[in-house]
Image (cartoon, rainbow over all chains, first blue to last red):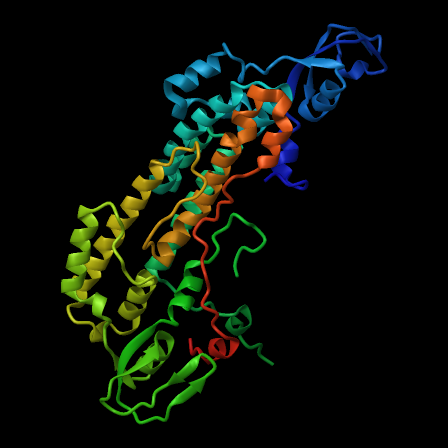
Length: 187
Length: 227
């Protein structure tokens, strides 16, 4: 699914994940900007991009704290359970689902998978209805709630409907080649 | 084909579907005398005045434009048939059998051969209604998809245009459903030691959503199309 060159996949791995360093490390002060010593103490906390966290985690140099939006007792979970369609997931993370999948696989958290699935199931229905019904003027407000994945889905639905409507309306069947429209130059 | 670069784009544009629909056969009554035409895709004709014969839609439209024939509306485009279909469509959850290209064919005929269709207005509004009912049904059907094992949809009697419109949305949605409900995400964590096994099982259903088979219009035919 996610190919090596998939820009969405690459950007999703840029998302920050809170971590705790298990060991001190010299020369990587930029990861933890709180002091000038150019080193990270054991037990200090830092938010690192996921691609880095994965490597460090597999070497057991850091431990992962589940990001608040996936945490078991988080507000997000309660909100999703209450009314998933109107939760602003985009402010949580524009790559909510992708990041969730990656983290769940990495730390073997069995609750994240079903949680994501439920969230998408309920929100999918809303995207579907809106994509088929909304006029273009109303969209910007709604789109701010969606994650990137949902926006793509929404646009896929809407553009095909729009293309069909355009075809139905008819209009010019032939497009005049730009060369033909040109007036002959006076010589 | 449009959108080969983006796998999620519609496989065909509406105009391309119209092009494919033009290969459907239709009955015409020529008013000219012409020998049979021998094409790669088949022989059509001979054409004799007032003797009905079969021709592909593109040829029929081309002749019609020159005033060389009248087109006989296909059987399903009669008021009786369409009323039946509309009622059945409203009553049942299933899609009624209609020609695969009914949207495109009806539009082509209304555009080029309006005078040849009996009860034009009635037929037009009936087809419009049928189309609306079916689209509504598709929307309802898609709402009821609920992940957890839905990797493929079988939509019997769906027409080319309808399938084409929902394709980008549905393939993308199914893909996400698949990703989120794959065995890796849901079950793997229960039995971490068996991870290798679960991973090997891979996708249980390789979903293919409404593969559309082109009826191979030959190049010669494309060139002959007088559009």
